[in-house]
Length: 117
View 1: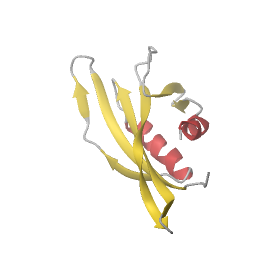
View 2: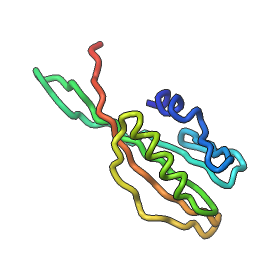
View 3: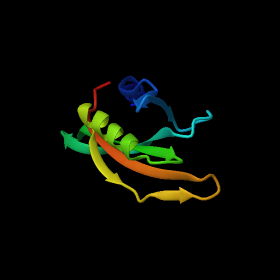
View 4: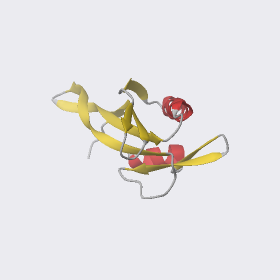
């Protein structure tokens, strides 16, 4: 799943002539805006002949910004939908007073065929 996300975003997005990094699980850079994503597990989606044929893959995107993050959220949703992910939910805006960051979370899922081994 990580390879697919890296292919979609190429580890960054560009909004208003700014490059915003997207990293898996951890960001150690110095940008004031960045996004990290997590695999949030998978679930059986469809079974046949006592085998799971399709599974539901879940992802979380965490957007960190010291300013307005709405364009970042919209861009991520647009790109994910273009690549057959379904937007599931947004969590409430969090403000981290110690770092002065807004922290916003969007959740997505994708139904994928489980290949035979």
